[in-house]
Length: 334
Ligand code: KG4
Ligand code: ZN
View 1 (tube, protein in one colour):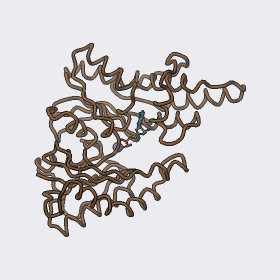
View 2 (cartoon, rainbow, N blue to C red):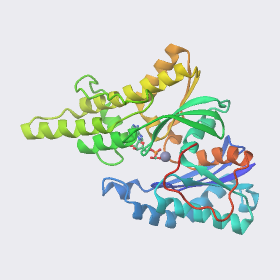
View 3 (tube, rainbow, N blue to C red):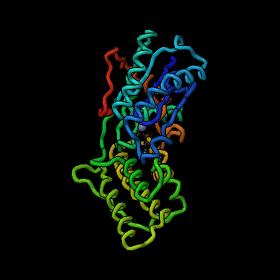
View 4 (cartoon, helix red, strand yellow):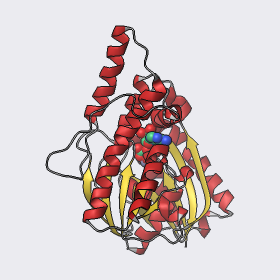
């Protein structure tokens, strides 16, 4: 079964053709990073307008690279939630148009579910059940995935997401957008013990996160240094900060795996590209005999191939939308 997938939840316009949920026939991504960089972050209206301009061409390219025509496509999967509403609406409406014109079933896909599915493309043998750590720009969740379409959030951030915390720290030390990847790059070789950051405990749940205190701590540290005329060692600060964020992600995820007796952990979302998170989780899981699955780097960020993968399993579970499908800015993964 061939699925044409469309993704436009943030600042990447993407289209892909995926066969039977596992084989990527094509995957095209148009990134808007260069334009949003000028503003230091994603400007929602600009994102929507660029999606409108790009979506037809990107889809044509995805079909052509897969050697397909629209009539060869068995279903159209689209990210409908969560994300920037104006951005989502472009992809949803475009997918609805294709579905209507071609009389092709329309499959709504939750963005975080698709991030988890990125690992189905990287590991052909991976199947639920497993525990997923989903860390993106807007979300930090520990999710119990009991089947391809059954998700239970067991831990989440009470305030900022891990990606947002990375981006804020990067911006505070003057690194360009997108912050997380630039912080990761500059922190290589830095001393992770040079600066100390709070490791907040969240009352009420051992699995929940809180990153706003760390974000404030990095801002205060940089401002205090500026006032005293002291120089910040950016690689050391980056390494210390990333390690503090990873301490929290690692601790809660391993505790959840231990208590739920999960022997498989899947990393998902943009922050799963972080080199420290990947290294430390690899070591921690290997020490405990837990299998760790991480999407290949090209599939960590937003892309449509992962939407095509999850779309296949949603279709098989009967999750098919009619043409009244709407975009939703905020929606649980459950
Ligand atoms: O999943 P994603 O591409 O978009 C959302 O759904 O939000 O995640 C984007 C987030 C951003 O906050 C970005 O800074 C972060 O992922 N990110 C990273 C790295 N690459 C992307 N954070 C830390 N280290 C990285 N290498
Ligand atoms: Zn994402």
